[in-house]
Length: 330
Image (cartoon, rainbow, N blue to C red):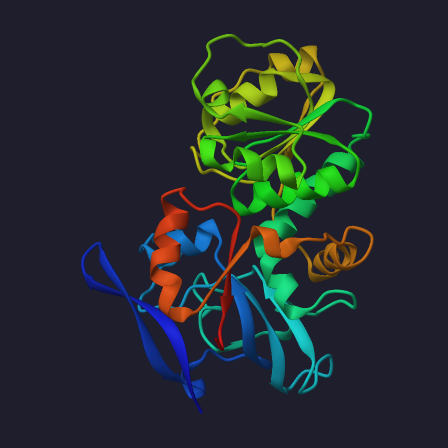
């Protein structure tokens, strides 16, 4: 059986090209579950993989796409049967295993979860890994004591996939959200989605030698890392937490122990890739139920395979706002 997929190839050392190719299901890696992909989405990691970043993907040619939702076509696992609607995010999908930017994937059953009742395959991928990561951040902040009356919650990189869903979710749960962005054109969008205040990212992104800053944040969701995360930590309220889930500014954190030992703040690490499947299932169930978000179409641009290359470049350059939803059969 033939299907279409985006294939990234290394044409010369450090030079990569992307093309839409016809592949055979027989070429897919071994796995218990064959899935016809309905939708995928673009995450920052996909843009890195498609650009030839060998810290993400070691071997090329390769089909990126760390997200997929679709329908089981065959399964040797008792947990799934043909016709089941399923979601796959993270693990090795789209990194070194052919991913969701193809119309079929074959993966281990241990990577697959049933699409929860209350969530359709399309909305699942508008959320995708980005929205799932946002939910993990919010869940961990709440578990560490964040209450709606605690004060301002900062979201950095607020126009990106993680940030924009975090803004929506925090607002829906009753928090006052301060959204940080460098895109002046996105201010109105962020305010409409639930931000109470907009902060220019330049106020956070420059290195500051002071070990402590004035207390300002009841909590934060940070996708930037680097000096941004350092400045956020320095300005957390006493006992407050920041959920760190990204490195779009830098993976290097220049930090002092003083905020931790003088203010008792918490740096919470968020991993959405290798999280155990039962934990993933529980968070997806929340996103389909008590944390279900209305108006997801407002943050989504739907594309087909032919628009992938341009959209990936936009995400890599930090120019995108919201989520790109890939319809594999448009």
